[in-house]
Image (cartoon, helix red, strand yellow):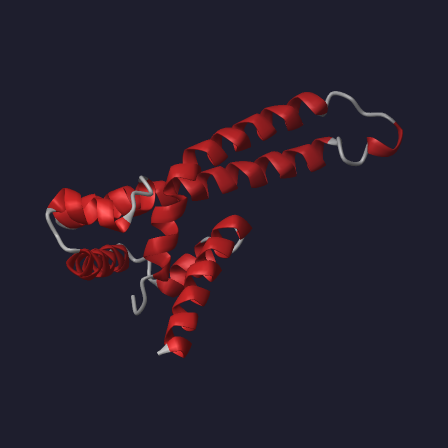
Length: 164
């Protein structure tokens, strides 16, 4: 992988994946329960085929998000423990750079260098599993909230390039 925006994105959204999949479960149940009531103009929305399509789409979305979480877990396990720890502390725990640096006995500059190296290692692990930038873009293109986070990291990188 050429850039680390996807690494940052996936690690940043990781903590929300369980919550979103639980929400999808509730939506599936709600769709199933609500399909019982068919009145007037809502008959088309609550027909068997419409309800089945919604449930199938929600289930496919849940599978995609669970697979994304498993991909992150496997990539973190594939890299060295100190790098994985830095990524977890930064993106999943949202700890501040100076706190993480102090915790590990680094100066802040060394911390950022090691964080960048950890992101690169994470990207390489994902690529070895067959998930490069294009594959991730295609795989997650229906998850607008994840794409928005990706675009935010991508725009930050472009703004830094313009500033230099």
